[in-house]
Image 1 (cartoon, rainbow, N blue to C red):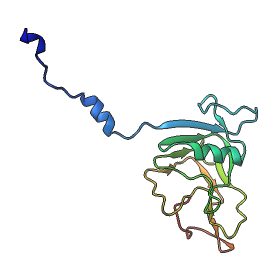
Image 2 (image 1 turned 180 degrees about the horizontal axis):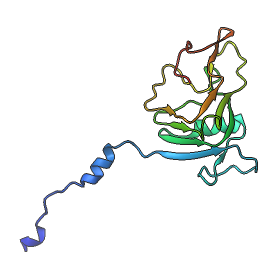
Image 3 (image 1 turned 60 degrees about the vertical axis):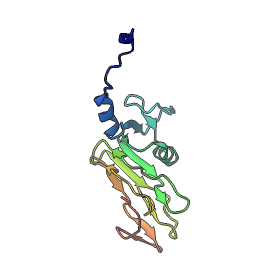
Image 4 (image 1 turned 30 degrees about the horizontal axis):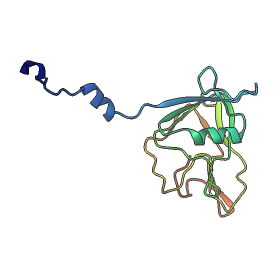
Length: 161
């Protein structure tokens, strides 16, 4: 009768513990300059529509940390990041990849407010980013920011590209 209540020694699923210690799985999304009017589902074969700065900025701002964003060929327009009113901000672990130098460009537009810090890709100096990457092959145009009524490069606060 007592044999029915014999307990086996507790065993730990080592693969489960190892997987909890690894970096979180990355989410991947594809964005293209679509002309067919479809929003897309974000897959390689049905990329999201990033054909306007509003669409692109909304998409980039909506992705969670550790997302790899694949930008297709063309010139993608963004209002980037500005201290006021905000804009999209990169998150830890995110990667932004393009189709190649001369193939994919992120271009800053509407950065005429000289009282505002504006950057193509940026965040406040209090926003710590761990593992954020803009990887080749990708060109970023209008690199710099507007501070005190003149364009200055590499001299404005906060992480920026």
